[in-house]
Image (cartoon, rainbow, N blue to C red; front, side):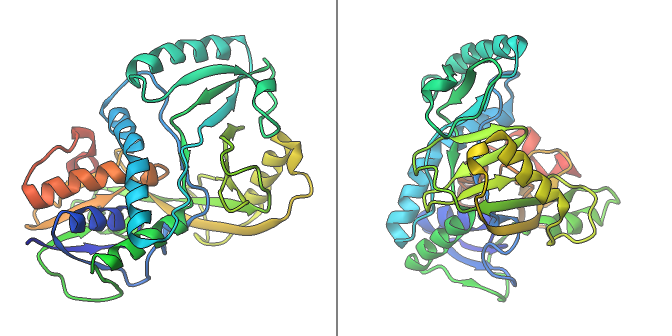
Length: 345
């Protein structure tokens, strides 16, 4: 039995802990602020694929992870008895003009090849997509069936519950035991940046809102005017988010979020008069390489990194957890070159 300590109880840390524990490791999770206290405690939860073109290892990795997600979350929920809010409900995007329509049709062809029948990217008439569909100048929308949604906080709670059933403690403090995985978000990027003088990554502030609007549990999410609108299964609608590299207070919301809400209402007039349940702000860790940063911590024996999820952490988590468990428990290194820690140092 391998001893594994996970430092950080965000989506990467909890997912790696879950996968390692299921494979027989003795695991503990340590986070001084508790589960989902950072970026993973957000409210949006858009699990959306990269555009199906200019294929690379990052896009292939994400595709595998998105296809793994349904089984991953079903098992977590079945073990712990807590719903994660996962649903592969698809996504709609309006098409602005003829050039964008031609490009969307080209991407439909590449998706047919690259996604290998596991999901589709099609052009649909907006009139056929129901009341929660965005206006489109061409009368058409992109409809992909790969996108999914999750409720970030509930997903973290579901993992904690499932880990509890497996006897894995999630505590605020404890000494390291065995192999150590540092999944510590923005603080971890700062720590990695110190030795070499280079910046391993930064925290990018995001602001989002939760609205009291029930679009239907199986309604596709929208991507319109650079915003995600995510219908959650609990009858709420998440809207976000900003991407701010310059900010004064990482956890405060301001006029930039007001603008996001206004843009969402302009795109979907059906939201006029809807109440705002919650306003959220937090920092998301973005590695210098712009890809997740996973693997050995250079120069520190038996220490490893899992960081840089940024906006795609929840979508990447099932595959990141699998690859990290392979490395920790079996010594099998299947980390894409773009994801290696050295790529951001």
